Image (cartoon, rainbow, N blue to C red; front, side, top):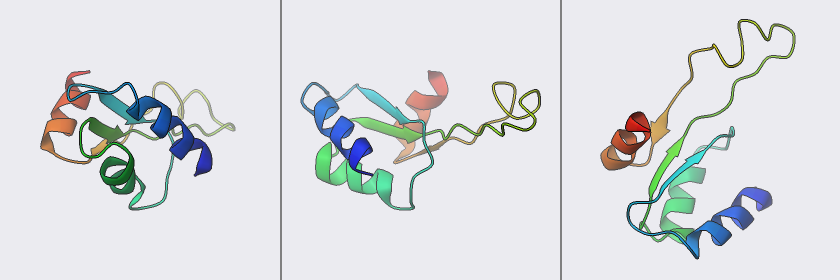
Amino acid sequence: MSAIEDVAHKIANKAHAITLIVIEATVLPGTSRKLHEEIFRKTVQLANCPHRLWQFDPEHYGVNQTRVLGAINKASMTAAKNF
């Protein structure tokens, strides 16, 4: 978590209201909300789209695999889908 929080602090220094941040990692429940509230101060669009690679079958589990998308709110979900 320290690496994600460190990067979040660096991004927060340059981010503004229309900034879309997508976490492409599997994180613990509540992590996105914590980052959004405590580090980004609710000033960015924040989504999570974990990369789901299974090394034993990269043809079916990798770039071509359907991915899960979650977001902190409706505005963030819309921004992430449009991206």
